[in-house]
Amino acid sequence: MSLGIKKGDKVIILSGKDSGKSGKILEILKDKSKVIVEGLNLSKKHMKKRSEADVGGIKELPMPLHISKVALFCSSCSKPVRFGIKMLKDKNKIRICKKCQQEI
Image 1 (cartoon, one colour):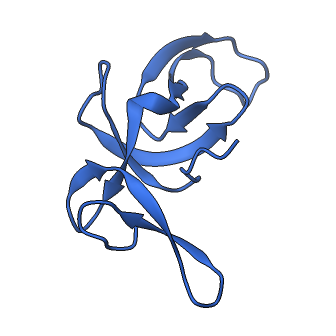
Image 2: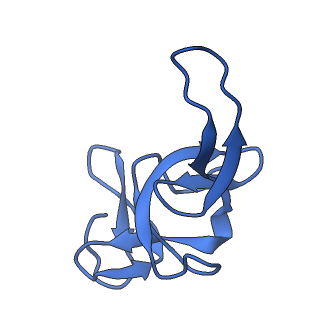
Image 3: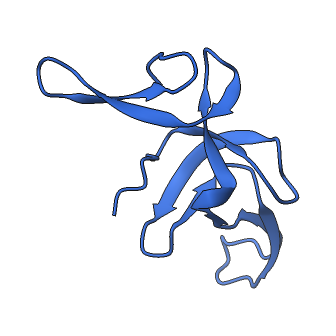
């Protein structure tokens, strides 16, 4: 199952408490169809001190979002867009923006 979004892509959150904000994808959970976006969908977690060097307390961790709640960000359009795949002459594939036909 191909999701079309890769690690390191810039995305925009479409719904939820962080809607309209953008960030970079840190991790993709393919089996659950979820992504973790850097600095968004933060949840507070109470962490216990495990060692002398470790600091306990309340930490904010990014939580997974469903893949349907994010859209790929096109830098030339400056909007969330759908993307298509274009075949090059040397049999490589690139992702292009459906609106402006530029490479993402």
